[in-house]
Image (cartoon, rainbow, N blue to C red):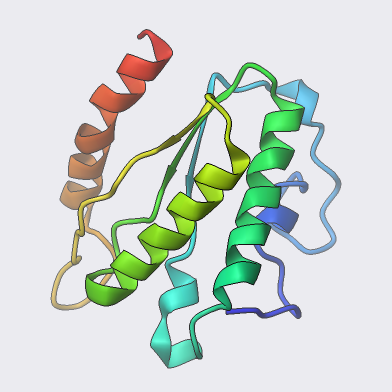
Length: 148
């Protein structure tokens, strides 16, 4: 939502722990086979403000993915729009994420569409069973790309 007074994913990615004054993470201490990115849900939380500027969102996403690509030259990156957003917001977020993927233009970056999982009547976040279903949704796609 364009907030500049809080850390966002690209800043947290550089830290050893998700604390503002944490030590920097040594990215070469662990090199992943794959990275899975699901960002943007909070940007479409209307109770917290207006959705982000599309061009700014796409540029920031593109820069973040390029940072990961530069650090990990063999890592496959999987990107989705997330399971919480639904309806018109999901379509908008999906479009922005797809634009970022196209701008990155790397054969190591893969867009995966996410099914909406509504949580339960007490909490809009997916339940444990829904998280299991999300893993089952994505597992075959990851296996295919990673040769598992």
